[in-house]
Amino acid sequence: MILVKHGASIVIGFASGLVIAGAVFAFITIVGVVPRLAQKTKTTGKIKVYESALALGGIFGTLATIFRFYLPIGPVGAVVVSAANGIFIGCLAMSLAEVLNVIPIFSRRARMQRGLFYLVLAVAIGKLVGSLLYFLVPGFFDTSNM
Image: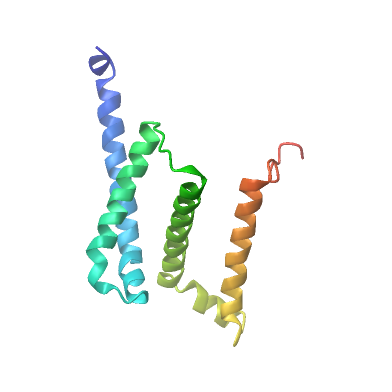
């Protein structure tokens, strides 16, 4: 009964999800996260494994969003999963910055001859501290009281 009543919404929602998922994976492919990661880690023979893990992660994330299920992984498992997510997002951001030549352009415009490593390190530490404050200090970034 519900399929007949909401059939168009189900089809449109599913089709929209397919388009968005395709766009996300196309973006990741164009940015070149997987080949760049394999090149940096000297594991170019494992690109198929990286691509499979990326696809399975996307599928698992989608299923976890739609069907609220619980995996008893405990605090250590949560830290491992969170670290893996952070590493992936960091790799994606750095690949995007590299493709767009953000860092070399910025260093030329700022006339920065040395210390680029420290600049990138400072950005990474800032992201880490901001994330820790956001997740560990309740209401730290709450702007509703302003």
